[in-house]
Image 1 (cartoon, each protein chain N blue to C red):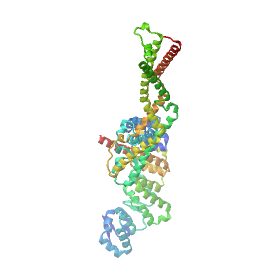
Image 2: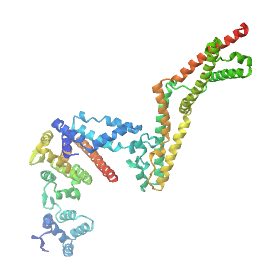
Image 3: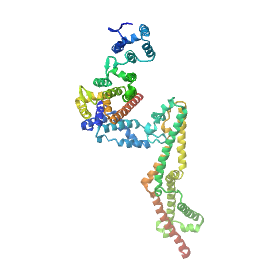
Length: 242
Length: 359
């Protein structure tokens, strides 16, 4: 049975091709996979895939997760693909995260947010063959619930196995040299606001094993922050009372 | 806290050598300009004056902060943390014991404003009363424990002071207003004067012999002795009466307080207990009805009376070392001596006159 599917301006003539290209046209793909016409066609064309798709459709999932998992129904042995990104290995994904730093790509965040990476590993049976990495990713998914940015950057450093941090287009592999430069007058303000806003530097230090220093830092800062908020609140109340 | 110091802190924790003194002193200057620092310095004056144990702990903590000796960003951060912590606790509402509020500021605080640690948070008692997420039983048990801790605090502090006072019993001896000596002296003076009066009105012959001449040139030795004896006896009695009144006033207060403090510790305990129960009942009654607690601390500070008694004894103990012999005592002794001298002379004269026949 021959067929032609059109995703936006792209002609697709096989289900495998559909699976390979869905990550480029996510909205159109969702519209297609949920349409009655396509489902009717799929039921006749490939009942197994139809059953899997229906089961996936009936589960409560976010749009991003649905598309990610659906593409592997049509093309099971495929590399990692999501929202325009394609990675042939976990390392490539890690490198992409780090190279994009200290900025955060919200689509790369989806790998932890919607458990896409762990589900991919389960589909490819890497959870048994590469148990260590699988457990790391499961732990990072838990950490994501507490601290999104820290989990995100840690994922990048762990997958890329890279000790180097890139900041202002410069690479630093030596922690001491990095901080010596950061405390200079020309860098201090930007660097300090970066630490406060995202976890790029802290995740790098955690990856390098400076966990005790990072914990100490966060403990001091969080304690002072809580007291400052409390003090401001009480000062406001006492002013209102007066 | 400025963002710069956050960055410096992290840098220092990883590479301590990358921070210079200029950055540390800039941070310290910033801390000293903060409102929280100024507020703490202002509040600590009242904390120092308070007698509460919590206040003393707070003051010790404050003394340990020394911004001028800070040598790293981390130390400055810890000092800043302590300042923020202490400034919020350095209000009388936190360290005050309502059963023993001493200074005027503490006495005016409402019971509802006092901070208590409930469910791991410091909250005013008003908030505890108005909060309906906890059962009345939980709150009343907490209140009982808290009031008991306040009572124990008062009792321990007072007992400590009493024991210190008892270390030097000679400085605070038992004093009686009317000792045996005083009674004998009183009897002596009264008898002497009674004797003169009775003799004057019953024995005409003696009266004639005792008749004081109008002209001074006719005065004989016996006239002078008689005159002086009567004068000193009268003066002695007067001074005796004045001395007794004076002792009654000064020593009775001392005796009452000393007896209460030294010998009647159980009565002190009863006062503390009664005051604690009054406070507890007030708290429980209003917490049950979710009312605000508007009475002030002064309404429950009867234990302050005991504190004032101890201060009184402490003052005597510290300043006086022993109960001084005052001027009235000295004068009365002089007058007594002179009275005795002239009475003895008079007696000798009459014995001589009776046996020797002097006219």
